[in-house]
Every structure is written in C-alpha cells, then in structure tokens.
Amino acid sequence: MPTERFQFTSSEGHQLAAALDLPEREPIAYALFAHCFTCGKDVLAARRIAVALSAKGIAVLRFDFTGLGSSEGDFANATFSSNVADLVRAADHLRGTRKGPSILIGHSLGGAAILAAAGQIPDAKAVVTIAAPSDPAHVTGLFKDRIEDIRKHGKVEVSLAGRPFHIKREFLDDIAEHGLMEHVANLHKALLIMHSPTDDTVGIDNATRIFVTAKHPKSFVSLAGADHLLTGKRDAAYVAGVIAAWAERYLDPVEPEQAVVSGEAARMVVVRETRNNKFQQMISVGPHRMLADEPVAAGGEDTGPGPYDFVLAGLGACTSMTMRLYAERKALPLERTTVTLKHSKIHAADCAECETKAGMLDQIDRVIAMEGNLDADQRERLMEIADKCPVHRTLTSEIRIVTKAAD
Image (cartoon, rainbow, N blue to C red):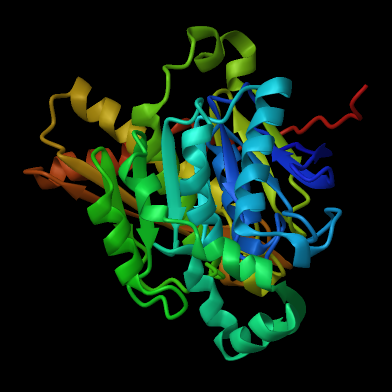
C-alpha cells in the first residue's frame, strides 16, 4: 500500500506535513482524517485506521496540525479555529491534486474540528466522529488546574500525556466561542458517531448530545471495551471496517472500469510490504484487498492473518466449495459445511504412513462438520470428495515454484 508524503500550506502560512495513504487500485473515495488533541498524523489510531481504510479502497489524507509532528509553526499559536481552517485547506489541496474528500473523519478534538469544518467542504457527503466531545472547550479539562494561571499570565506550560505544551489565553478564548451544536444541527450530511461507553476522557454523554442534535441520516456505533485513544489494534481495524461499510451507502457509485478488473490481472496475486510495522503486507487479488501479518508472539502486530493462516483458509474454502458442488450435482440435502483447520509440526517418526522418516513434517488437521439430513453413506462420500478438492491435491502433490527477479 503506497503512502505519499508531502507538505501543504496552512491558513497561517506554515508548511504542514501530510501523508496520503493510497489503495493499490484507483480509490473508490478520498477521506480526510483529523487527529486527536496534541497527537499527530502518525499516532497509532490514525495510522492504523488509514491503512485499514486504504485496504478497502479508500484513500486517506492525514496531516500534523501546526506545531505538531513534522509540521512547522508553534503549537502555542494554534487555536481550534486555525485547526478548522487547516482542515479546509487540506481538503482544498486534496481537491486540487486528486479529488475532494467525500468522507471526513475526526478523532477526539479532531472530531469536533471535523464537525465545525464540514460545512466548508462541499465534497463531503459522510462525516464520522470517533470519541468526539460535544463542546471543544471540553479539552480544557485536561489542564483545568492551570486555567487560572493561563488567564493570568497569558501563556503557561502544561503537561499533556507526559509531554510539555504551551497553552495561551487566546486558545481558551477561541475555544469558548465555538457553538459546535449549531454546526451539528445544520450539518446536512450523513453522520456516524462512534464512541466507547467506558471512555473516561470524553464521556459517552458527549455522543448522546451530538446524536440528539443531529438530523437524519445519523448512526451511532458503540466501541464497547475501547479506550479513548483506540490503542487496541482490533479497535482501530473495527472502526475502519464500520466506516467503509457505512460510508458506501452515501458515496457515488464506482465507474465500471474502476470496479472491475478483468483478464489475467484479476487473478494475479500481488503481495507488497506496507512498512507500517515489521511484517505487515498488503495483498491484492484483483479487486480484493487484505492485510497479512504475524501474531504478536512472533514479532508482528496481528493486523491480519499470517501466511499459514492463508494456506489453511485456501484449503478450507476449496474443501467446502468442492463438497457444495458435489452435493448440488447429486441433489444431496447438505445444508451447510464448516471446515476447521490447524497447522502444526510433527516428528516424522510419529507418522507411520509417511514416506519421510527423519526430521519434522508439516501436518494439517482438518475437521469437517456437515449440517443436513444426510445418511451415513452420503456423509462418507462427501468426506471422500473433500480430499479431491484442487487445493488439497496441490498441497499433497509435487509443487514447482519458479522464482525470478523483477525487471
């Protein structure tokens, strides 16, 4: 999955660092992502959601707000209003170089900024908030014990998530002026609100207020068990999956030439490193995209199935499909097949029927469950057919793999 890194000019004239995560094929849509307060475009939640969305064909632009990450400027001079303005500038840049964002996504205070900016981004048809406050001033609760000092001295250093940041009086004044609910009431775009009921940073009552104020079409998805920053890998992947499925209803249909890959290319399997972690790979099979990774115990981040998982999945799918074809041809009352597989290494000496008698062997345990009013003979015949599936034959026959360097 390619990632383009570049800069664009902020509303205050600073160069802001941006990353555009692109799918392997022509994007079905472009999304603009706003990160949480004092975070950055490369915070785990932003990066993981962007990667997962690009795997589903949605390109995602994320960038560092002023004074954060690799962007120019002083964070102390940034305000909620300047963040909103920079989101509009980011959308303008995307429109001028690619295509305007049809999906807007904001995490935490970034969600509030997205709601405030949405009315100025005409391309946007779908808006998503993740753990967003219903009032931008909610963020002042992170340094509430220093507010009086900020008012008195004009600028004070505060500690946020263990890092020092300077907050100015102007920031407090600006954020107090924003009536976010007015923007929500006049959104006129599809809205998806995602929030954890156990979020102890931005309470679930914020999601309730946004939802009640917003007009239809609006949806709410509970992120039960997730923390505010979505530090769990599975939480970020779940968020991306829900966004992709939900937003599809509000996007323009993809042109046939973008949606269909024909001929030999449709069956070509391409595997490419994403470089987002040590092992993660992007797998492209015609129009399909998926991630591969290794489990945490093996040094990966478990963002996708492992190589042997895909081998087992191929064998299981082929087994079930072959049995289905036979059952339909013979009019057998097979209602459903479930194939459960496991890969392991065994000592060759423990396998009496194996030709190899020394060292270790690969063993695949396959358990097949059949539902339906089948008699004993029909079940026995279906089990015989299972061993005739093409992938089974491939795995148990001599395989020739031809490897060469790309031109």
